[in-house]
Length: 455
Image 1 (cartoon, rainbow, N blue to C red):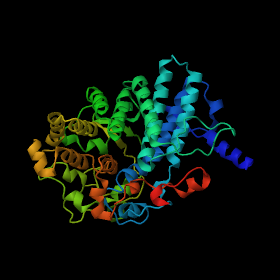
Image 2 (image 1 turned 135 degrees about the vertical axis):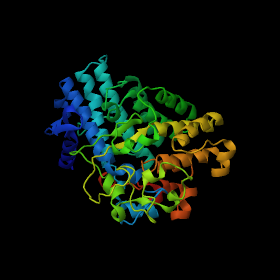
Image 3 (image 1 turned 120 degrees about the horizontal axis):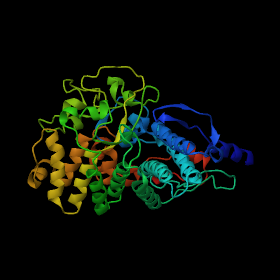
Image 4 (image 1 turned 60 degrees about the vertical axis):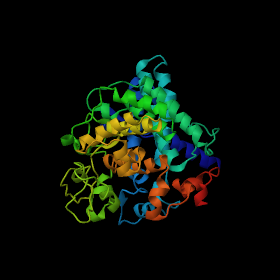
């Protein structure tokens, strides 16, 4: 047993980070012990770049499996995770039930958070900026973990000794959410306001931290704080809605003014967007009939999202451009946009509505609708079309943010998951909103227990 623990700790102590002047143009360096690595400011920056490297791997596929796979906008002909998620027959051997990559990201962040202050003193602005990025990326990982699994192990220190508890129990999700908030507040106060150019979109800025806080507060139903953080994003001159004729560029080219934080990829570091969405009948997901039927007449976004000429569209070309026809299964170098201005505006609209501030909510909603070529809605119009203002905002998020990884979390957050998904796949138990914990994690850690629905 002791030898097993040493091997386990040895693996945890070795992190493969990579660095150069450009985050997306860096060669891997050899494995190292964090205690011996953090010696210079360049080492500290390389350590943070290593966290971004883990983020690239973590969300390559999972942003869609976690955020879209169980929701109503997609359908699938594929076996494995896509089919099981759509049919709501999740099990403990699902690939998307693994949290390994999230905890790899958290582990790298924990090393950086601990050791950067030993290289750069606490009053060093550059050091605080780096720690802010590390804490934001740790918070992002825990935010996904909480939304997918509920209670999860909360690990805030790097593993460096056999004396540490290597079999952590699950922490109450409220404790985890509190830590996420603390990390993001630190990031919002200490990250750089701007890096300049494209780096503003692929590195964590203060604006990115505020956008994450907006999502967190909406998940916690803390609407006043959600409005406050969203207002900081809207007031940030780094961000502006792009005109409709540039809407596709948000996804096909990346780095637009509308983008707040996107995961950067290139011809070397690539993702699975094509496999997820672009291989016609062979892709993981294609637009569901209910999604295609949900567009209002005259919506300028519809034929930018999928081929409206096909009777049964089998390809989502939102991320590749109108008319995209490449059937290659090769990895994609397109960035994955996690947070953008339209997303935050619609969350702010929802928060205003929850606070009884319907006029403010409709103003934000109509700004997004107008860009898409749709007429303004007043309260009566929203109620006539969608039942109420909240449903109108949620519908707008369905269309505007389609396939970007938000839909499932929106349904859970607003309490509409069972209502929407029950007619599709029989979802009828709130305990079933969580994923099962993967059997590998359960087998390796005797202090973990499976989520109740899957026991």
